[in-house]
Length: 380
Ligand SMILES: Cc1ncc(COP(=O)(O)O)c(C=O)c1O
Image 1 (spheres, rainbow, N blue to C red):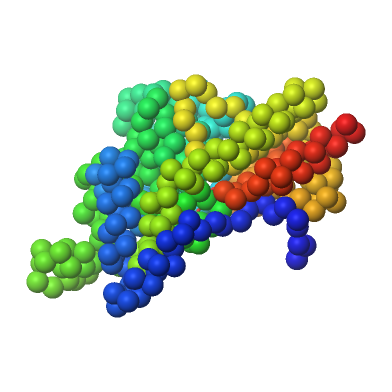
Image 2 (image 1 turned 180 degrees about the horizontal axis):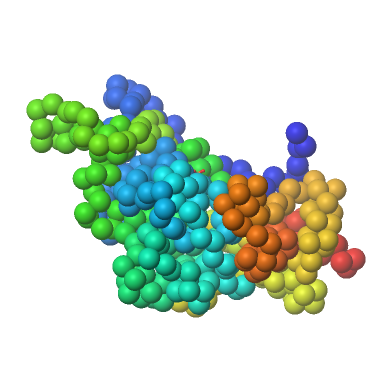
């Protein structure tokens, strides 16, 4: 594997991770739902103001739980952006749903709400949206359309923890939302996730599905004498050792976000003039959105130039990466009916988007090196 001077991502600890993990071990209870899992739940519920948060083993698993909770069945349709990670769609396809791919807005790269209503049919069961890069989708319009058609809104908020749309936290709009704590995310425990439940009707069944289809959560709370098999389910709860790691990160929320904000603003400030001069687009964050500083992407004028810039940076030992190949054009997407030109903005953006190295501890000196290398691309 190539060793880069500037890596694309580097997970960063905040200081208390090892201490809390040692405490979990000393406590002698390292399976799921121990003291640190409860602390993470309470933290997320209080900070976000959601009725229920449940840690999961990944965002993918939170998505799968959501598909089970929404009772997605063969024949149902789920509207989902093609410009997303495979798990957003897979969770619903696993239950037999047909994904109906929607294109994205050219500015925020979020689902294009002006194209939403025409895709709704009597079979539409859910709209699964993604707040790309932690910038909110146009929730007012989406919720209005979904409400009028009686369709459940689900938020894949993998990038968007603590981001806001019009002053309200992302992940608190839909009936359900999923978070990711994968190594590449702002807050991490290596692999992990959470299901946020905004509609309380789903809480009891969510606990059952997460505990292998049993009412073990009620048993542990002393609400029943024994626990038994109630429903379908799986094992979606992470070890308390991982929750301990995550809690140290959540506690440091302000510091983490301040570090990432600095990195994002440095790129923006130092690339602004260059981007204008060379027809390159920097990220767009509408005034009514508070973003999460999850990533920094640029849109190059063409696929050829994007590929050439990746190679140019690689030659200077900098790893930059593209993001999301259109799912409707993947092998699986095409088997599900996806065709070229179904989502023209997605197809165009996917060709031209480049993500720059981004992590909490990326130093200004390293960023200056990246910026100089980028500016050298057009021969400055
Ligand atoms: C939008 C989106 N959803 C879901 C996931 C899956 O997250 P996890 O790795 O926690 O399952 C990702 C991963 O990067 C993602 O970008």
